Length: 423
Image (cartoon, rainbow, N blue to C red; front, side):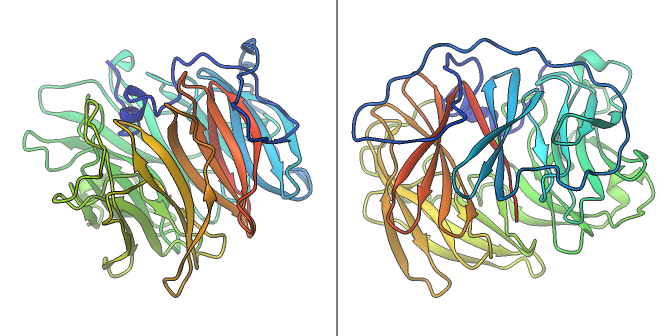
């Protein structure tokens, strides 16, 4: 059994980063000329070093000076951690980790399951690979039919939450949210079971609201491809005692069908950015491949009140990329808008919406014919990061200069993930 988050949809559609042929990432970024991209030679996969317990205080400087982002690049089961500077300097941190890693806001913590599927152990480490805690998810009597999924550090970087899902049982789907105290590695587990009516579904933690009192989870049907079924906020303040998750105060922020992408938490933890689709709208030239994933609306939700407001809607036959990005100060938004040519975009343009609602065009994204859009991050005032994939599924990471739309290729590999924008 493999339990997957809704992001695995994009793996089926060429948008994910599994089982991909690829070349090595380059630690030295190069400006992109207006010529077709040629993939470099295949990389040699590096082994993942065994985890050893070595609790330490954070060193005075864990990242190179001027680091604005952390990203991983490599094969699906073996990624190398890199630090990106504001001057586009790329530094390998020499740390090899499995797929599925997350980083805390400052980059002082890295967490990852020991395998991409079926893992029951989570490693919590420093960026240099020093393991601080090794914790095991309580997933029931049959670990082979279980796994650890979404993970999220709180905003004060004192706790880590993750989802553990057990194997199918007669009474439902056993699942739990575990919160790890980073100071000492102690855990509080909040057990749950999905009933026959499906009213209490598992969900991937993806962030904590301002104040660290509410954990945000993206629900999905268990043992499936993970279509998003609603975003909930659970009251889990520091020191909350372990117990049934159903006993914790919780509320629905977004209902199933009201959003079509992983929501992005604003830098101050007060708002969610998400995309959606007007059901009466179909982009021009769009062909459905397996599932209909086209979107044309961009929304912001205020977490405290639960009120949503539309930021932009495409109504001219174009469509939006499935993810957008907050500016570092949370006042502006970046998104990609373009036209379909079958099941994939034929072209995409990066656009910026400021706090007054004015939209400015930045420039075209370097999407090659047959390629895919994977995501955006905005990590410095004048620099965004765009992840794209070629027609042969090679992932590419680009730095986009927002002043004039200039692009620089930072990495090209089988799988690339931006773990954190460093404030």
